[in-house]
Image (cartoon, rainbow, N blue to C red):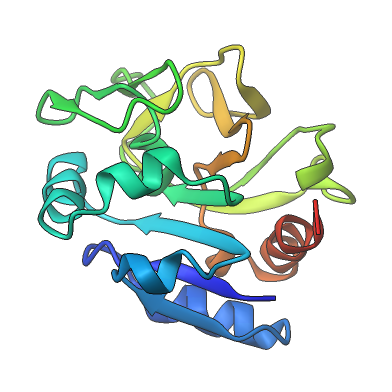
Amino acid sequence: MKLYIIDTACANLASLKFSLERLGYKAEVSREIKELEKADKLFLPGVGTAATAMRNLENFKLIEFIKTTQKPLLGICLGMQILGEFSKELEQKTLGIMPFKTLKFEEKKGFSLPHMGWNDVKSEDVLFKGLNGAYFYFVHSFCVDLNAHTIATCEYSKPFSAALKKGNFYGVQFHPERSGEAGELLLKNFIQENR
């Protein structure tokens, strides 16, 4: 099983790599298309702004590869958000793999931004096998509304998409690599599905 983490140059890649290694899997970090094409599963992590992530992917000539890959790909946090068409964060056009926009949480009394910490996630999808209602770790000020591709929901001032799926593309808004046993089980589910 070849696992590759796409190097977006805007994420803590080491914590995801260590998390996968704790599960007994070897994971490589790369931005070389020839390497990434060898993958059985791909991970697209991201921290920071959509504009920075998209600029880096463009500079690394990775946009077309990501959009056309047939390999299962899991976008994490910002990596999920850029699977959509557009982010209101700096008005940034994103990959357009799924038809959604990433919007900022509205300011609401009693809800500070960013949404940071543990929150429960509801899902019946196979990616969340054994995890319906489990708690995952979130850090984000922007979110994706519920839509046709939502496979998991969470609530923070309003319901939002905790996870999305379209074809071979998956995305999770939370950080599985920082979510303890629940996060490890989700990563294992992703790796073992469609083997």
